[in-house]
Image (cartoon, rainbow, N blue to C red; front, side, top):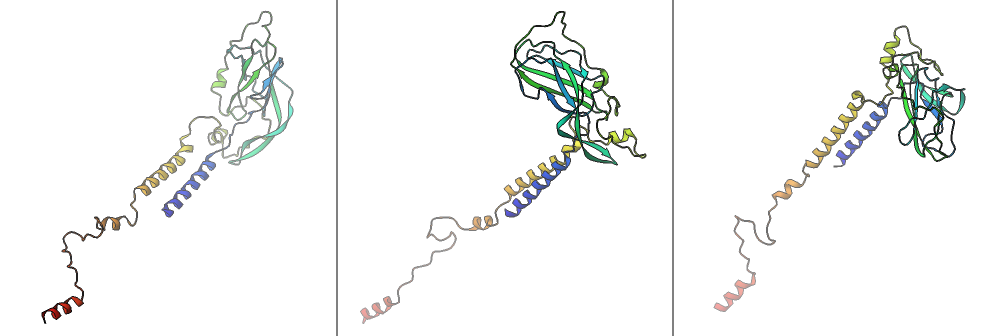
Length: 275
């Protein structure tokens, strides 16, 4: 059993290492760094606009919405803001000579999204959709709770009904829609941009069979070994089954019981009586 436990421990360590190695860093640039208001924060005063800071300048056709707790849109057309230095740098990865290397981004490029009015209290959601300089989608949302003063819509207000640009739903790969805020990923003469992009690790949340195949096989192997170890009989089980069973003191069946032996002095006493 100790040997089986040792093998299971080795397999568990191998599975952990494999999962760590397969956790490839995101390749997309232009991700959200910080926001005002911050994620899951509470706002107690009305804000004229929200500021979403990205590691790259958002694409000109980027799409932003702000919805109330009841789902109504209160956003107005967005615009680029003044870049600012981030309090904490953001790490992203660039493909350099076929190797993904980390790069630190110290500057945030904001998208300013005006809020027309604050009709209710509760959880608001700011959603964004853009495309990075490497052609990857940049999507996400920022949720926050509003507990400030409520207000009515401005005069002549009409809730926006615009939809995202189709180019954002199916972006070209790669794309130069937005300039890079950090060091560009060099492409060697032997590798075209399309080939480099096809070999890049994806930042999306879709299912990747190659990522999960090895861990799945390791889990199946561990389960098989556990079941096999549980079914294997113990080394002394066969000997225990061969031992005779029955009440103590009774001779096994098929063998006559031995007659009790007489004491040696009995014969001498009997001879003396005859005399």
